[in-house]
Length: 562
Image (tube, rainbow, N blue to C red; front, side, top):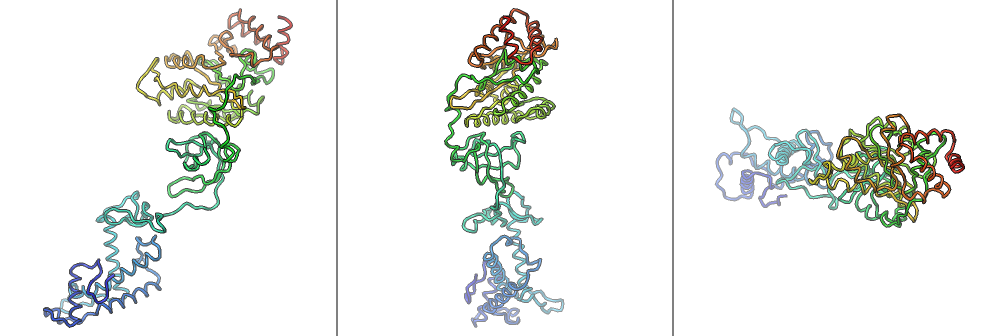
């Protein structure tokens, strides 16, 4: 702001106007100057003091008068009241101080040689001068009249608001404005009202933060997934795959919701969950608690599995299946049996790169959690979903729960990791040398804990597909499980179900799973069947089992006869 009586003018007044204002002041002070006749004949101009008084009057008039449309300045809409007041004062003083000086140079003449009346120094004169300055500021803010993109913030020609700096136009030189209101950048803040209850499974990002994924959506990423800050993760020691309940609040502009409060972690308070031991710190032991699959006289397949290939909690089972041997029906029957006979077991069916119609059928039939990444999904989807599901299973097993994972199939999962790894070094069948690291680790997670809890994994491996890669994948997993069941193409072609090859199927350490009397009868039965061909042996076993409603009655008859 200019000082009174000093003859200086506001900084925004041009150089010619400053010279004219200085000459006017010197005339009013009675100084001896060489004044041209044209200037001497003009009426005397008001002093600087009078200009300041009229500027103050104009300011008071503006304060009490409602602003008109042309008085609205988009650059000061988001400024605080004090900043807007200083902006109006500067415009008023600049316009009134410059008006007397500009009169001697820019007053137009009429055709008759008389002067045309200039705008008065009241509100109209303020509006005229202020509008010119507003236009100049807009041109400077737009970088010389160019368009402003929405990503840079500010207002463009269409009146769109800048976003990068709280609505203020960018300053000259491209520097961002300083933050206002105590050092915080101006702009909308998330509403801190009552939060929305949320439930989800934590997926971690390599940078330390995470998101809560919805199991009902198949753990796929959505815009409504709450954001979990790294500070919350570090504070409560959260691990990937934990189920969290809490409150989420809306995020800022262009952001999704964020988790504000954590109520429970795996059904415990956040403080209590920190006492849960890590999965790798627990003690694995040999599986010994059998999972009964027999649900009645039928299906016969489940009764055969209980006799020849029993499954226990914490077992690592591999189902080796050529194409069209009843693999899908076998998995559905296993899932039904587990959900009916063992409601304490949490069942997860993971379908990777399967047909969409099979996914729909499995969801409608299985009473458990079905997670699928069908063949129309990208490879990255197969990788994400499979890893997150196994992390979820680990977190539940840590807390003492029994988890049963049906994976269909290990072969297609390994194919996805083979495309994803891409280390540049390939082995047999074009298989990347590092492609099997994560799939083998996932399959190897199955175990029974001495402290309580178990993780059972039953996976399917494809053979006889004509692909050398599939054969190489099977060889990598062969021998890693403690139960292996091989389906026979010859039995399937003869429509003999279950198409189980008795000679190639069995369970390791079955003496730990079966009672002694049952183990003795099963050993006798296997000896009698092994002397037959696989087709004759399965036909004979199916006919005999159909005569007895339960396996217990059948084994009692075997012990009495043999």
